[in-house]
Image (cartoon, rainbow, N blue to C red; front, side, top):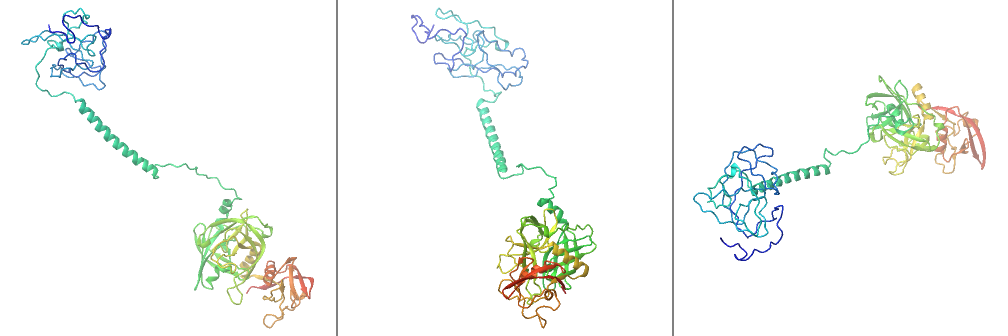
Amino acid sequence: DAPTEGHAPDEPAPRPLHEPDPYSTPPYGGPGPWAPAPPVQHPAATPAQGTHVPPGMAQAPPAPGMAQAPPPPHQAPPQAPVTPQAPPQAPGMTPPHGTTLPPAAGPVPGQSAPAPMPSHPGMTPPHGTQLPAGPADPHHPAPMAQPAPTAQWRGYDPWTVVPPAAPKTPKTVSRRGAWIAALLIALVAGCVGGGIGAYAERDHASGGVDVKLPQAPLEKETRAPGSVAGIAASSLPGVVTIHVRGSSEEGTGTGFVLDKQGHILTNNHVVQPAGADGDISVTFNSGQDAKAEIIGRDTGYDLAVVKVDRVSGLTPLPLGNSDSVRVGDPVVAIGAPFDLAGTVTSGIISAKERPITAGGEKEDGSDVSYVDALQTDAPINPGNSGGPLVDRKGRVIGVNSAIRAADDGSGLGGGQGGSIGLGFAIPINQGKRVAEELINTGKATHPVIGVTLDMGYSGDGARVNTKGAGSGPPVSSGGPGDKAGIKAGDVITEVDGVPVHSGQELIVKIRSHRPGDRLALTVERGGKKRTAELILGSASSG
Protein backbone atom coordinates (compact mmCIF):
# COMPACT_ATOMS: atom_id res chain seq x y z
CA ASP A 1 0.00 0.00 0.00
CA ALA A 2 1.07 3.56 -0.59
CA PRO A 3 2.24 5.36 2.50
CA THR A 4 -0.15 7.77 4.19
CA GLU A 5 0.75 11.38 3.47
CA GLY A 6 2.36 13.00 6.45
CA HIS A 7 4.23 10.16 8.29
CA ALA A 8 6.50 7.12 7.58
CA PRO A 9 4.98 3.66 7.09
CA ASP A 10 6.67 2.12 10.10
CA GLU A 11 5.97 4.97 12.49
CA PRO A 12 2.85 5.07 14.61
CA ALA A 13 0.26 7.65 13.52
CA PRO A 14 0.53 10.96 15.38
CA ARG A 15 -2.18 12.01 17.85
CA PRO A 16 -5.01 13.88 16.17
CA LEU A 17 -4.91 17.64 16.48
CA HIS A 18 -8.28 17.49 18.27
CA GLU A 19 -10.64 14.85 19.53
CA PRO A 20 -12.87 13.21 16.96
CA ASP A 21 -16.26 14.90 16.59
CA PRO A 22 -18.81 12.47 17.97
CA TYR A 23 -21.55 14.16 15.95
CA SER A 24 -19.60 13.96 12.69
CA THR A 25 -19.87 17.74 12.21
CA PRO A 26 -18.10 18.71 9.01
CA PRO A 27 -15.43 21.40 9.15
CA TYR A 28 -16.27 24.90 8.01
CA GLY A 29 -14.57 26.21 4.92
CA GLY A 30 -13.23 24.33 1.92
CA PRO A 31 -11.34 21.03 2.09
CA GLY A 32 -7.61 21.07 2.71
CA PRO A 33 -4.92 19.92 0.29
CA TRP A 34 -4.38 16.67 2.16
CA ALA A 35 -6.42 14.46 -0.19
CA PRO A 36 -7.45 14.70 -3.81
CA ALA A 37 -11.22 14.80 -4.04
CA PRO A 38 -12.93 12.48 -6.50
CA PRO A 39 -15.00 13.91 -9.31
CA VAL A 40 -18.63 14.45 -8.37
CA GLN A 41 -21.82 15.38 -10.14
CA HIS A 42 -24.85 17.33 -8.93
CA PRO A 43 -27.86 15.07 -8.72
CA ALA A 44 -31.11 15.84 -10.45
CA ALA A 45 -32.92 19.00 -9.36
CA THR A 46 -34.62 18.60 -6.02
CA PRO A 47 -38.40 18.39 -6.43
CA ALA A 48 -40.58 21.08 -4.92
CA GLN A 49 -41.30 20.77 -1.24
CA GLY A 50 -44.15 18.35 -0.61
CA THR A 51 -44.13 17.03 -4.19
CA HIS A 52 -44.27 13.24 -4.54
CA VAL A 53 -41.02 11.78 -5.83
CA PRO A 54 -41.33 8.72 -8.08
CA PRO A 55 -39.54 5.53 -7.09
CA GLY A 56 -35.89 5.58 -7.97
CA MET A 57 -35.63 9.33 -7.33
CA ALA A 58 -35.40 9.19 -3.55
CA GLN A 59 -32.07 9.98 -2.02
CA ALA A 60 -30.51 8.01 0.78
CA PRO A 61 -31.38 9.35 4.20
CA PRO A 62 -28.59 11.11 6.04
CA ALA A 63 -26.49 9.14 8.41
CA PRO A 64 -27.36 9.41 12.07
CA GLY A 65 -26.03 12.61 13.57
CA MET A 66 -25.52 14.27 10.17
CA ALA A 67 -27.25 17.52 9.36
CA GLN A 68 -29.46 17.62 6.29
CA ALA A 69 -29.60 20.74 4.17
CA PRO A 70 -33.08 22.32 3.97
CA PRO A 71 -34.82 22.47 0.63
CA PRO A 72 -33.98 25.54 -1.45
CA PRO A 73 -36.54 28.38 -1.36
CA HIS A 74 -37.48 28.07 -5.01
CA GLN A 75 -38.09 24.41 -5.92
CA ALA A 76 -38.10 23.10 -9.47
CA PRO A 77 -41.18 21.20 -10.65
CA PRO A 78 -41.08 17.39 -10.79
CA GLN A 79 -38.86 16.10 -13.56
CA ALA A 80 -38.31 12.74 -15.21
CA PRO A 81 -35.51 10.67 -13.64
CA VAL A 82 -32.11 11.72 -14.90
CA THR A 83 -29.23 9.33 -14.82
CA PRO A 84 -26.42 11.08 -13.01
CA GLN A 85 -23.20 11.44 -14.89
CA ALA A 86 -19.89 12.49 -13.47
CA PRO A 87 -18.44 15.56 -15.20
CA PRO A 88 -14.78 16.17 -14.60
CA GLN A 89 -13.95 18.23 -11.54
CA ALA A 90 -10.71 19.67 -10.37
CA PRO A 91 -8.91 17.85 -7.58
CA GLY A 92 -9.51 19.16 -4.09
CA MET A 93 -13.28 19.75 -4.56
CA THR A 94 -15.91 18.02 -2.46
CA PRO A 95 -19.61 17.52 -3.02
CA PRO A 96 -21.83 20.45 -2.00
CA HIS A 97 -23.31 20.58 1.45
CA GLY A 98 -26.24 18.24 1.82
CA THR A 99 -25.23 15.86 -0.99
CA THR A 100 -25.21 12.21 0.12
CA LEU A 101 -22.88 9.96 -1.82
CA PRO A 102 -23.59 6.20 -1.98
CA PRO A 103 -21.04 3.58 -1.00
CA ALA A 104 -18.79 1.97 -3.54
CA ALA A 105 -20.49 -0.71 -5.54
CA GLY A 106 -17.36 -2.40 -6.82
CA PRO A 107 -15.06 -1.64 -9.67
CA VAL A 108 -16.43 -0.64 -12.97
CA PRO A 109 -15.87 -3.34 -15.61
CA GLY A 110 -12.77 -2.65 -17.63
CA GLN A 111 -11.18 -0.44 -14.99
CA SER A 112 -8.88 -1.27 -12.12
CA ALA A 113 -9.96 -0.49 -8.63
CA PRO A 114 -8.59 2.83 -7.38
CA ALA A 115 -6.24 2.97 -4.46
CA PRO A 116 -7.85 3.71 -1.13
CA MET A 117 -8.15 7.44 -0.35
CA PRO A 118 -5.52 8.47 2.15
CA SER A 119 -6.97 9.82 5.32
CA HIS A 120 -5.89 12.77 7.37
CA PRO A 121 -5.85 12.29 11.12
CA GLY A 122 -8.52 14.15 13.05
CA MET A 123 -10.55 15.35 10.04
CA THR A 124 -14.12 14.40 9.28
CA PRO A 125 -15.63 14.25 5.84
CA PRO A 126 -17.44 17.25 4.36
CA HIS A 127 -21.03 18.01 5.33
CA GLY A 128 -23.18 14.93 4.59
CA THR A 129 -20.49 12.97 2.70
CA GLN A 130 -20.32 9.21 3.37
CA LEU A 131 -16.87 7.54 3.15
CA PRO A 132 -16.59 4.07 1.62
CA ALA A 133 -15.71 1.05 3.75
CA GLY A 134 -12.03 0.04 3.82
CA PRO A 135 -9.56 -2.07 5.78
CA ALA A 136 -9.52 -1.63 9.50
CA ASP A 137 -7.16 1.00 10.77
CA PRO A 138 -5.90 0.46 14.32
CA HIS A 139 -5.32 4.18 14.72
CA HIS A 140 -8.76 5.32 13.61
CA PRO A 141 -12.20 4.17 14.51
CA ALA A 142 -14.16 2.27 11.95
CA PRO A 143 -16.26 4.39 9.64
CA MET A 144 -19.97 4.63 10.20
CA ALA A 145 -22.26 2.17 8.53
CA GLN A 146 -23.64 3.32 5.25
CA PRO A 147 -27.16 2.66 4.11
CA ALA A 148 -27.87 0.61 1.07
CA PRO A 149 -27.75 2.49 -2.18
CA THR A 150 -31.00 3.54 -3.74
CA ALA A 151 -32.10 2.66 -7.21
CA GLN A 152 -30.87 6.02 -8.40
CA TRP A 153 -27.29 5.27 -7.40
CA ARG A 154 -27.06 1.53 -8.13
CA GLY A 155 -23.89 0.60 -10.03
CA TYR A 156 -22.29 4.00 -9.36
CA ASP A 157 -19.01 4.31 -7.52
CA PRO A 158 -18.28 7.96 -6.68
CA TRP A 159 -14.70 7.17 -5.88
CA THR A 160 -13.94 5.59 -9.26
CA VAL A 161 -12.31 7.75 -11.86
CA VAL A 162 -14.90 8.08 -14.61
CA PRO A 163 -13.97 9.29 -18.08
CA PRO A 164 -15.36 12.68 -19.03
CA ALA A 165 -18.88 12.59 -20.33
CA ALA A 166 -20.15 14.42 -23.35
CA PRO A 167 -21.30 18.00 -22.69
CA LYS A 168 -24.97 18.22 -21.80
CA THR A 169 -27.38 21.11 -21.91
CA PRO A 170 -27.81 22.38 -18.36
CA LYS A 171 -31.25 21.96 -16.90
CA THR A 172 -31.06 24.96 -14.58
CA VAL A 173 -29.76 28.52 -14.79
CA SER A 174 -26.27 28.97 -13.41
CA ARG A 175 -25.83 30.91 -10.19
CA ARG A 176 -23.81 33.60 -11.92
CA GLY A 177 -26.52 34.17 -14.51
CA ALA A 178 -29.17 34.24 -11.81
CA TRP A 179 -27.23 36.84 -9.83
CA ILE A 180 -26.72 38.98 -12.93
CA ALA A 181 -30.45 38.79 -13.77
CA ALA A 182 -31.38 39.67 -10.18
CA LEU A 183 -29.01 42.63 -10.17
CA LEU A 184 -30.41 43.91 -13.47
CA ILE A 185 -33.98 43.62 -12.21
CA ALA A 186 -33.06 45.40 -8.97
CA LEU A 187 -31.28 48.16 -10.91
CA VAL A 188 -34.22 48.75 -13.24
CA ALA A 189 -36.72 48.66 -10.36
CA GLY A 190 -34.60 51.09 -8.36
CA CYS A 191 -34.36 53.54 -11.26
CA VAL A 192 -38.09 53.39 -11.96
CA GLY A 193 -38.99 53.68 -8.29
CA GLY A 194 -36.56 56.54 -7.77
CA GLY A 195 -37.96 58.39 -10.76
CA ILE A 196 -41.52 57.96 -9.57
CA GLY A 197 -40.57 59.05 -6.06
CA ALA A 198 -38.72 62.12 -7.34
CA TYR A 199 -41.64 63.09 -9.55
CA ALA A 200 -44.12 62.64 -6.72
CA GLU A 201 -41.93 64.65 -4.34
CA ARG A 202 -41.53 67.43 -6.88
CA ASP A 203 -45.25 67.39 -7.58
CA HIS A 204 -46.05 67.67 -3.88
CA ALA A 205 -43.40 70.35 -3.29
CA SER A 206 -44.65 72.45 -6.20
CA GLY A 207 -48.23 72.55 -5.02
CA GLY A 208 -49.71 69.82 -7.17
CA VAL A 209 -53.33 68.81 -7.22
CA ASP A 210 -52.76 66.24 -4.49
CA VAL A 211 -51.91 68.88 -1.85
CA LYS A 212 -54.67 69.14 0.73
CA LEU A 213 -54.58 72.16 3.03
CA PRO A 214 -56.65 72.49 6.20
CA GLN A 215 -59.69 74.71 5.88
CA ALA A 216 -62.56 75.73 8.11
CA PRO A 217 -65.97 74.39 7.14
CA LEU A 218 -68.58 76.59 5.48
CA GLU A 219 -70.37 78.74 8.04
CA LYS A 220 -74.00 79.52 7.30
CA GLU A 221 -74.94 81.40 10.43
CA THR A 222 -76.07 85.01 10.01
CA ARG A 223 -74.06 87.87 11.44
CA ALA A 224 -75.23 89.96 14.35
CA PRO A 225 -77.48 92.83 13.19
CA GLY A 226 -75.21 95.40 14.84
CA SER A 227 -72.01 94.14 13.23
CA VAL A 228 -70.61 95.71 10.08
CA ALA A 229 -71.50 92.57 8.15
CA GLY A 230 -75.03 92.61 9.55
CA ILE A 231 -75.47 96.31 8.73
CA ALA A 232 -74.14 95.78 5.20
CA ALA A 233 -76.45 92.82 4.61
CA SER A 234 -79.54 94.83 5.58
CA SER A 235 -78.53 98.09 3.87
CA LEU A 236 -77.01 97.05 0.54
CA PRO A 237 -80.35 96.11 -1.11
CA GLY A 238 -81.49 99.74 -0.67
CA VAL A 239 -78.31 101.37 -2.09
CA VAL A 240 -77.98 102.18 -5.81
CA THR A 241 -75.25 103.30 -8.17
CA ILE A 242 -76.12 106.30 -10.36
CA HIS A 243 -74.57 106.90 -13.78
CA VAL A 244 -75.15 110.31 -15.34
CA ARG A 245 -74.38 111.34 -18.89
CA GLY A 246 -74.90 114.89 -20.17
CA SER A 247 -74.05 116.82 -23.29
CA SER A 248 -70.62 117.80 -22.05
CA GLU A 249 -69.81 115.69 -19.01
CA GLU A 250 -70.66 112.50 -17.16
CA GLY A 251 -70.19 111.10 -13.71
CA THR A 252 -70.90 108.34 -11.21
CA GLY A 253 -72.39 108.60 -7.75
CA THR A 254 -74.52 106.81 -5.19
CA GLY A 255 -78.06 107.08 -3.85
CA PHE A 256 -80.44 105.21 -1.60
CA VAL A 257 -84.13 104.29 -1.80
CA LEU A 258 -86.54 106.43 0.23
CA ASP A 259 -89.86 104.68 -0.41
CA LYS A 260 -91.70 102.02 -2.38
CA GLN A 261 -92.72 104.56 -5.02
CA GLY A 262 -89.14 104.64 -6.34
CA HIS A 263 -87.84 107.93 -4.90
CA ILE A 264 -84.08 107.97 -4.45
CA LEU A 265 -82.07 110.59 -2.53
CA THR A 266 -78.61 111.66 -3.70
CA ASN A 267 -76.40 114.74 -4.00
CA ASN A 268 -77.15 117.56 -6.39
CA HIS A 269 -73.61 117.52 -7.74
CA VAL A 270 -74.12 113.85 -8.74
CA VAL A 271 -77.03 114.57 -11.13
CA GLN A 272 -75.96 118.05 -12.17
CA PRO A 273 -74.03 116.86 -15.29
CA ALA A 274 -77.33 115.58 -16.76
CA GLY A 275 -78.62 119.13 -17.14
CA ALA A 276 -82.11 119.43 -18.57
CA ASP A 277 -82.00 116.58 -21.11
CA GLY A 278 -79.24 114.23 -19.92
CA ASP A 279 -79.50 110.54 -19.21
CA ILE A 280 -79.63 109.06 -15.70
CA SER A 281 -79.53 105.31 -15.05
CA VAL A 282 -79.76 103.53 -11.73
CA THR A 283 -78.24 100.13 -10.94
CA PHE A 284 -79.51 98.27 -7.90
CA ASN A 285 -77.45 95.96 -5.73
CA SER A 286 -79.17 92.99 -7.38
CA GLY A 287 -77.81 94.09 -10.76
CA GLN A 288 -81.14 95.38 -12.07
CA ASP A 289 -80.94 98.59 -14.14
CA ALA A 290 -83.57 101.28 -14.53
CA LYS A 291 -83.92 104.74 -16.05
CA ALA A 292 -84.47 107.62 -13.64
CA GLU A 293 -85.67 111.22 -13.89
CA ILE A 294 -85.00 114.20 -11.66
CA ILE A 295 -87.87 115.14 -9.36
CA GLY A 296 -86.15 118.13 -7.77
CA ARG A 297 -82.75 119.38 -6.68
CA ASP A 298 -81.31 122.15 -4.52
CA THR A 299 -77.86 123.67 -4.88
CA GLY A 300 -77.68 125.31 -1.44
CA TYR A 301 -78.23 121.97 0.33
CA ASP A 302 -76.49 119.89 -2.35
CA LEU A 303 -79.42 117.43 -2.41
CA ALA A 304 -81.54 115.95 -5.19
CA VAL A 305 -84.31 113.39 -5.61
CA VAL A 306 -84.63 111.11 -8.65
CA LYS A 307 -87.35 108.56 -9.34
CA VAL A 308 -87.51 105.18 -11.07
CA ASP A 309 -90.75 103.70 -12.43
CA ARG A 310 -92.00 100.14 -12.85
CA VAL A 311 -89.42 98.66 -10.49
CA SER A 312 -90.68 96.10 -7.99
CA GLY A 313 -89.07 94.76 -4.83
CA LEU A 314 -87.65 98.08 -3.70
CA THR A 315 -86.01 98.14 -0.25
CA PRO A 316 -86.28 101.58 1.38
CA LEU A 317 -83.68 102.31 4.04
CA PRO A 318 -84.93 103.41 7.47
CA LEU A 319 -84.06 106.96 8.50
CA GLY A 320 -82.48 107.76 11.86
CA ASN A 321 -82.24 111.01 13.79
CA SER A 322 -79.01 112.92 13.36
CA ASP A 323 -79.65 114.94 16.50
CA SER A 324 -79.20 111.73 18.52
CA VAL A 325 -75.72 111.05 17.14
CA ARG A 326 -72.77 111.33 19.50
CA VAL A 327 -69.11 111.73 18.74
CA GLY A 328 -67.49 108.30 18.73
CA ASP A 329 -70.58 106.42 17.55
CA PRO A 330 -69.73 103.66 15.03
CA VAL A 331 -70.93 104.24 11.48
CA VAL A 332 -70.83 102.48 8.11
CA ALA A 333 -70.53 104.25 4.74
CA ILE A 334 -71.86 102.53 1.60
CA GLY A 335 -71.34 103.65 -1.97
CA ALA A 336 -69.56 103.23 -5.30
CA PRO A 337 -66.15 104.88 -4.96
CA PHE A 338 -64.51 105.10 -8.38
CA ASP A 339 -67.51 103.14 -9.71
CA LEU A 340 -66.85 100.17 -7.39
CA ALA A 341 -70.49 99.49 -6.55
CA GLY A 342 -71.49 98.10 -3.17
CA THR A 343 -68.35 99.19 -1.33
CA VAL A 344 -68.70 99.14 2.46
CA THR A 345 -66.39 101.02 4.83
CA SER A 346 -66.65 101.65 8.55
CA GLY A 347 -65.52 104.21 11.10
CA ILE A 348 -66.86 106.53 13.76
CA ILE A 349 -68.41 109.96 14.06
CA SER A 350 -65.39 112.20 14.44
CA ALA A 351 -67.26 115.47 15.04
CA LYS A 352 -70.71 117.04 14.82
CA GLU A 353 -71.97 120.37 13.47
CA ARG A 354 -68.84 120.84 11.39
CA PRO A 355 -69.58 123.88 9.17
CA ILE A 356 -68.37 123.25 5.61
CA THR A 357 -68.93 124.79 2.22
CA ALA A 358 -68.61 122.85 -1.02
CA GLY A 359 -68.77 123.74 -4.67
CA GLY A 360 -68.00 127.32 -5.64
CA GLU A 361 -66.97 126.51 -9.19
CA LYS A 362 -69.32 129.13 -10.57
CA GLU A 363 -68.22 132.73 -10.38
CA ASP A 364 -71.47 133.96 -8.85
CA GLY A 365 -71.23 131.39 -6.07
CA SER A 366 -74.66 129.98 -6.86
CA ASP A 367 -73.34 126.43 -6.65
CA VAL A 368 -71.96 126.79 -3.15
CA SER A 369 -73.56 124.53 -0.57
CA TYR A 370 -73.49 125.19 3.14
CA VAL A 371 -73.63 122.19 5.39
CA ASP A 372 -73.53 121.80 9.16
CA ALA A 373 -71.99 118.38 8.62
CA LEU A 374 -71.31 115.18 10.47
CA GLN A 375 -67.59 114.40 10.24
CA THR A 376 -66.47 110.77 9.97
CA ASP A 377 -63.27 108.84 9.49
CA ALA A 378 -65.04 106.11 7.52
CA PRO A 379 -63.23 106.07 4.15
CA ILE A 380 -65.19 108.13 1.61
CA ASN A 381 -63.89 108.65 -1.92
CA PRO A 382 -65.12 110.15 -5.20
CA GLY A 383 -68.19 108.12 -6.19
CA ASN A 384 -69.39 107.78 -2.59
CA SER A 385 -71.32 111.05 -2.96
CA GLY A 386 -75.03 110.65 -2.26
CA GLY A 387 -74.58 107.34 -0.44
CA PRO A 388 -75.91 106.62 3.04
CA LEU A 389 -74.01 106.91 6.32
CA VAL A 390 -75.75 104.46 8.66
CA ASP A 391 -75.57 103.85 12.38
CA ARG A 392 -75.13 100.53 14.18
CA LYS A 393 -78.86 99.83 13.83
CA GLY A 394 -78.73 100.20 10.06
CA ARG A 395 -80.54 103.57 10.05
CA VAL A 396 -79.45 106.41 7.77
CA ILE A 397 -78.06 109.34 9.77
CA GLY A 398 -76.34 111.23 6.96
CA VAL A 399 -75.75 111.66 3.23
CA ASN A 400 -72.07 111.36 2.30
CA SER A 401 -71.26 114.54 0.39
CA ALA A 402 -67.69 115.83 0.71
CA ILE A 403 -64.14 114.97 1.72
CA ARG A 404 -61.00 116.87 2.53
CA ALA A 405 -58.69 115.72 -0.27
CA ALA A 406 -54.93 115.39 0.01
CA ASP A 407 -54.21 116.48 -3.56
CA ASP A 408 -53.82 120.20 -3.18
CA GLY A 409 -55.67 121.07 0.02
CA SER A 410 -57.55 123.77 -1.79
CA GLY A 411 -60.97 122.82 -0.55
CA LEU A 412 -63.55 120.21 0.20
CA GLY A 413 -65.02 117.81 -2.28
CA GLY A 414 -64.11 117.09 -5.84
CA GLY A 415 -60.54 116.11 -5.09
CA GLN A 416 -59.27 112.85 -6.57
CA GLY A 417 -56.61 112.26 -3.94
CA GLY A 418 -58.73 109.76 -2.03
CA SER A 419 -59.72 109.54 1.58
CA ILE A 420 -57.46 110.83 4.32
CA GLY A 421 -59.99 110.11 7.04
CA LEU A 422 -61.86 113.44 6.75
CA GLY A 423 -65.30 112.79 5.33
CA PHE A 424 -68.46 114.89 5.73
CA ALA A 425 -72.12 113.96 5.53
CA ILE A 426 -75.29 116.08 5.43
CA PRO A 427 -77.30 115.26 8.59
CA ILE A 428 -80.35 113.20 7.71
CA ASN A 429 -82.66 115.58 9.58
CA GLN A 430 -81.81 118.21 7.04
CA GLY A 431 -81.86 115.72 4.19
CA LYS A 432 -85.29 114.41 5.16
CA ARG A 433 -86.85 117.89 5.20
CA VAL A 434 -85.34 118.85 1.86
CA ALA A 435 -86.27 115.51 0.27
CA GLU A 436 -89.90 115.86 1.37
CA GLU A 437 -90.07 119.37 -0.10
CA LEU A 438 -88.50 118.26 -3.38
CA ILE A 439 -90.89 115.31 -3.71
CA ASN A 440 -93.95 117.35 -2.82
CA THR A 441 -93.21 120.66 -4.56
CA GLY A 442 -90.11 120.11 -6.67
CA LYS A 443 -88.38 122.90 -4.71
CA ALA A 444 -86.76 123.37 -1.31
CA THR A 445 -87.07 126.33 1.04
CA HIS A 446 -84.20 127.95 2.91
CA PRO A 447 -84.43 129.63 6.32
CA VAL A 448 -83.31 133.27 6.23
CA ILE A 449 -82.82 136.21 8.64
CA GLY A 450 -83.23 138.90 5.97
CA VAL A 451 -79.73 140.51 6.03
CA THR A 452 -76.82 140.76 3.56
CA LEU A 453 -73.45 139.66 4.93
CA ASP A 454 -69.99 141.06 4.18
CA MET A 455 -68.19 137.91 2.99
CA GLY A 456 -64.86 139.75 2.82
CA TYR A 457 -64.82 140.62 6.52
CA SER A 458 -61.63 139.26 8.14
CA GLY A 459 -62.54 139.84 11.77
CA ASP A 460 -64.06 137.34 14.15
CA GLY A 461 -67.77 136.83 13.52
CA ALA A 462 -70.17 137.62 10.66
CA ARG A 463 -70.60 141.33 9.87
CA VAL A 464 -73.74 142.73 8.30
CA ASN A 465 -72.87 144.54 5.09
CA THR A 466 -73.22 148.26 4.82
CA LYS A 467 -74.59 147.90 1.30
CA GLY A 468 -77.38 145.70 0.13
CA ALA A 469 -77.40 143.33 -2.78
CA GLY A 470 -78.20 145.26 -5.93
CA SER A 471 -80.25 148.30 -5.08
CA GLY A 472 -81.83 146.86 -1.95
CA PRO A 473 -80.92 147.71 1.66
CA PRO A 474 -78.47 145.47 3.67
CA VAL A 475 -81.30 144.67 6.14
CA SER A 476 -84.58 143.70 4.48
CA SER A 477 -87.37 145.94 5.70
CA GLY A 478 -89.85 143.96 7.79
CA GLY A 479 -87.70 140.85 7.71
CA PRO A 480 -86.69 138.74 10.70
CA GLY A 481 -83.45 140.72 11.26
CA ASP A 482 -85.18 144.07 10.99
CA LYS A 483 -87.76 142.96 13.53
CA ALA A 484 -84.96 141.84 15.89
CA GLY A 485 -83.26 145.25 15.69
CA ILE A 486 -80.25 144.27 13.64
CA LYS A 487 -78.52 147.20 11.85
CA ALA A 488 -75.98 147.50 9.02
CA GLY A 489 -72.44 147.04 10.36
CA ASP A 490 -73.47 144.84 13.30
CA VAL A 491 -71.28 141.78 13.97
CA ILE A 492 -73.07 138.53 14.85
CA THR A 493 -70.78 136.38 17.05
CA GLU A 494 -73.05 133.58 18.35
CA VAL A 495 -76.11 131.53 17.32
CA ASP A 496 -77.92 129.96 20.25
CA GLY A 497 -74.76 130.35 22.30
CA VAL A 498 -72.50 128.67 19.69
CA PRO A 499 -69.71 130.96 18.39
CA VAL A 500 -69.50 131.74 14.68
CA HIS A 501 -66.29 133.05 13.19
CA SER A 502 -67.29 133.98 9.63
CA GLY A 503 -70.18 134.72 7.33
CA GLN A 504 -70.03 131.15 5.93
CA GLU A 505 -70.43 129.70 9.39
CA LEU A 506 -73.44 131.90 10.11
CA ILE A 507 -75.14 130.70 6.91
CA VAL A 508 -74.39 127.08 7.79
CA LYS A 509 -75.90 127.46 11.25
CA ILE A 510 -79.00 129.16 9.92
CA ARG A 511 -79.57 126.57 7.19
CA SER A 512 -79.29 123.77 9.65
CA HIS A 513 -82.71 124.88 10.95
CA ARG A 514 -86.15 124.96 9.42
CA PRO A 515 -88.04 128.10 8.44
CA GLY A 516 -90.07 129.24 11.44
CA ASP A 517 -87.51 128.10 14.02
CA ARG A 518 -86.67 130.62 16.76
CA LEU A 519 -83.03 131.64 17.15
CA ALA A 520 -81.12 133.77 19.68
CA LEU A 521 -78.30 135.80 18.12
CA THR A 522 -75.50 137.54 20.00
CA VAL A 523 -74.88 140.88 18.27
CA GLU A 524 -71.93 143.26 18.87
CA ARG A 525 -72.23 146.95 18.07
CA GLY A 526 -69.79 149.66 19.12
CA GLY A 527 -67.98 147.27 21.48
CA LYS A 528 -71.16 146.26 23.22
CA LYS A 529 -72.96 142.91 22.96
CA ARG A 530 -76.64 142.24 23.13
CA THR A 531 -79.00 139.32 22.39
CA ALA A 532 -81.48 139.53 19.53
CA GLU A 533 -84.20 136.90 19.19
CA LEU A 534 -85.89 136.26 15.87
CA ILE A 535 -88.04 133.76 13.93
CA LEU A 536 -86.49 132.42 10.74
CA GLY A 537 -88.15 133.35 7.50
CA SER A 538 -88.34 131.28 4.28
CA ALA A 539 -86.95 131.70 0.81
CA SER A 540 -87.45 129.48 -2.20
CA SER A 541 -84.50 127.80 -3.86
CA GLY A 542 -85.63 128.74 -7.38
